[in-house]
Image (cartoon, rainbow, N blue to C red; front, side, top):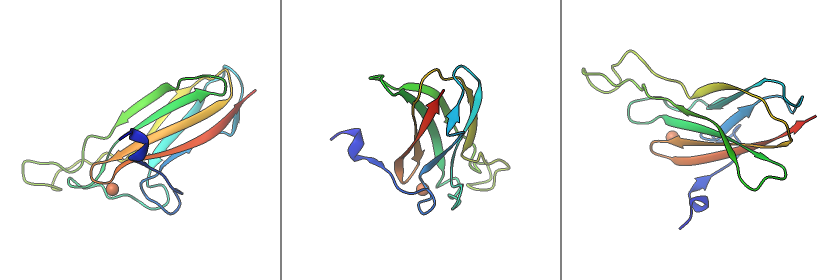
Length: 130
Ligand code: FE
């Protein structure tokens, strides 16, 4: 068994678990820009104590690089937990995070997310650096 057999994918417009990567298609080399990763942009994912998105990780692989680089790792840790019982808490973290990045070569952004009951999901986006 390998990880790739466990990581699911799909069109984020029809599958609520697929992480969405939002950033410009093209950026200037060495210039800071913003990337937002989220789950549930089109179809909201449940956010309850029993069922929620636990984390999203974002990587970059340069076009001629062998290995990916981790750009950010985002944990979503409040899902209605409370001493009074599940889903009675006052706080719910939504699965959305923003990171500022500089790149100096073109490549691929890759996101992987984890739902506590539906497992691992991935998506990717090409980015051109000029
Ligand atoms: Fe789920």
